[in-house]
Amino acid sequence: MIDDVIKRFKELDKKELRIITGIEIGMKHHEWVPIEEVAKFTKLPYSTLEYKIRELVKQNMVLATHVPYDGYQIYFDAYDALALNTFVKRGTISGIGDEIGVGKESVVLEAVKDPELSIGEQQGVILKFHREGRTSFKQVKRLRSHLADREHFSWIYAARLAAKREADIMKKLCDDVPMPRVIDNNRHALVMELAKGSILYKTKLEDPQWFFDEIMRLIKLTYSKGIIHCDLSEYNIFVFEGGVQFIDWPQYVETTHPHADELLERDISNLLKYFKRKYNIKKDLRELAEYVKSSEES
Ligand SMILES: Nc1ncnc2c1ncn2[C@@H]1O[C@H](COP(=O)(O)OP(=O)(O)O)[C@@H](O)[C@H]1O
Ligand SMILES: [Mg+2]
Image (cartoon, rainbow, N blue to C red; front, side, top):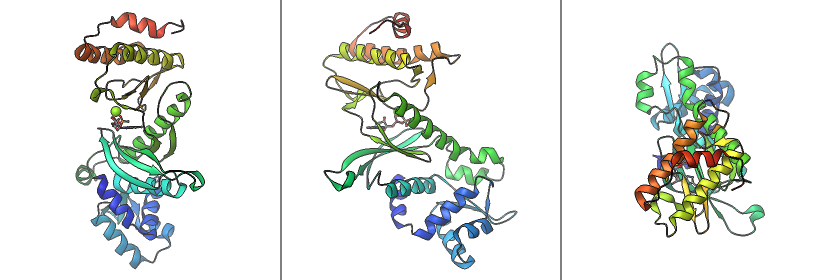
């Protein structure tokens, strides 16, 4: 799917980007953005505008309704294109590579960033598009007449909020807790460093006890900064010789959260189960939770 977006992104011309941007801005106030608003924003003559919008609708970048008036919305493909365009303009990415992860709530790709002042090598980076609140394009088409305004906005705003939330917490914690650094954030997307090493569930550890203890130490460190990750598992942890990094932060909570204890125990329990199943490491959940919450130095 994302391949299509990139291909289409490369084919989008300035006018089309402007049309999509006009619809995006209009969507702050309209469920369906009237063509007059798009015309005002783009300053394109109606004939050009209508032709271009028809093309965008054919490419599934734009959704159209004709009742009770001609109105338009963008969907994730177009939103992706707008974020990509911003990153390219800011120089935070200069090229896009393979898709490396599709979760329920995100699409993740490899990308490259040109070096500062064009000195040195290109850097491999990660481009993560949030997908919270997604309903399929078909579903949106089918449901569009029944959706209330706020529900309609939700897929764009839910994804944008999640990306901002993830970028903000990563920036806040990254000097203390090991994780990839965030390079840029726009709309529902983040550019970040590649995580170090390999993802835990795909890695055969030679010293699993050391990694287990290190993960617990980092959960404790995170907790001491007032934060619980809330989605920790072998799928969101990278391991390398001598270290560990946590990724995938948007669902974090603060330690003052009413269900903080439960959420912390769930994170620990996920890891306990994994290390028991795979490496026969056995530890007591309650004791670990007490260790994480205690203020003693680790
Ligand atoms: N910084 C990164 N470095 C390397 N791989 C990453 C990085 N961020 C995400 N990934 C890959 O993309 C997958 C999905 O990203 P993640 O942040 O976990 O989102 P989701 O909420 O969809 O699980 C990860 O499991 C991992 O394989
Ligand atoms: Mg994940």
